[in-house]
Amino acid sequence: MTLLANAFSLQMVDLTKGTSVDFVPVTKEEVAQSGFQSVIGHQDTANVLTSLLGVEVPMNRVSVRITPEDTLYVAQVTGGRLPEGATTLPEGMSFAFIKATIRQ
View 1: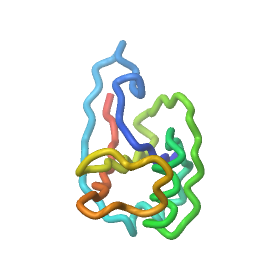
View 2: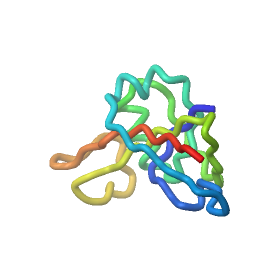
View 3: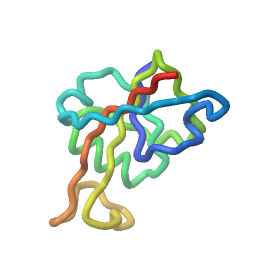
View 4: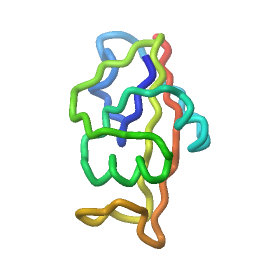
């Protein structure tokens, strides 16, 4: 499964096993073309990502557990917090797109 999240949490992996996580920067184009399922937990973030990626990114606040077969893209906002009601990135803010994969 390919997922798009706005954060990475230790709750996403099975901590009863030894787990390594690889984080690799990727382009927004790779993310947009990945066929991801959104697990974006905030509406404003989903709105801005829809505008930025050019594909629908619905808000979908769910708990996620990833396995070695999954790909998790993380859209990490930098430069502050998105203002309430944002649909585009304010000046001085950006998203870093990171591909997270796990090994157990």
